[in-house]
Image (cartoon, rainbow, N blue to C red):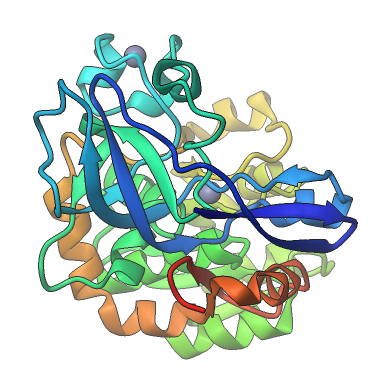
Length: 338
Ligand SMILES: [Zn+2]
Ligand SMILES: [Zn+2]
C-alpha cells in the first residue's frame, strides 16, 4: 500500500510499504476518507518518517479470528487511539482515557497500521463505529476530531436552542463545534483572528466573531451577553492563554468545555464564579453513536461548508501546505484517488 512520509522540512510524498495484517480482534480498514488534524506540525518541523494521522472512515476488508462486532464490507468510522477493552472506561465508551492502551503494531506484528495517512489501517472491532448507508465517508469521518470533541462538549453541557455558546478558536475543531451548536439551534459567538475562518464561520451562521487579542474583547463579550458573560463556552484554540480568558469571560455558574489543550485556568476565579469545567478529548461512542450520526446527517449543509478542501493522495504535499497556512476549514485526504 501507499502511505505518506515526511522527507524534509515542509516536504512530503508517498511511499510503498507492506499492508498491515490483522490478528485477534483487529480489522483491516481500506481508508476512503482521512481528515487532516495536527500532523502538519510534523510536516513543518521536517521530522522525517511516516506521517501519523488518527482520523479515518473506510471499509472493513479483512478481520482477525476473534472479530465479532463488524463484518467484511461494512462501512465504519475508525475511532482514534487504542484501549485495553476491559476497563470501566473502555467498556463505557470512554476508551480515549484508558490507562492501559494496547499497542496494535506489536499485537498484529506490523510495521505500520495505526497511521491513517495511508491506504489501510487496523483497529480493534469495538473501536469501529458503523456508518449509516445515507452518510458519505467524508461526512462520517467528521465523527473523529472534526466534530467528536465538540459533540462531547455539546452533549455534556446539554446545549439547546435557548443557549448562547462562545467558541474560542474557529479552526477545524472550533468550526465543527460551531456546526453542532448551530444544528442544535443555539446562538453562536466566536473568538478568532484568521479572516478566512471568520468569513467561513459567519457564512455557517456564527453571529459575531471577536478578536481575542483586542483590548475590548471581554467588553464585547459582555455586551453580547447582557452584561453577564458566556454561560456555555468551548475552548478549541489550544492557545495557552485561551482557557483563562474563557474563565474571565464566563457568566456566574457557567460551564466551560475544553477540547483544546491550552494553558492553565485560575482556580480562584473558577471557584468565585461557581464554574464547571469539562475535559472533552473525544465523544462517548457507546452511549452516543446514534446521536452523533443523526447530528452528522442533520448538519449536512454546515459540513459541506466546513469541509473546504478534499485532496487525492497524489496531492498530499498541497494538502499539507493548505493545512499549514490555515487558509482552510477541515481538509480530507482520499487515499484511493489519484
Ligand atoms: Zn481500557
Ligand atoms: Zn485529531
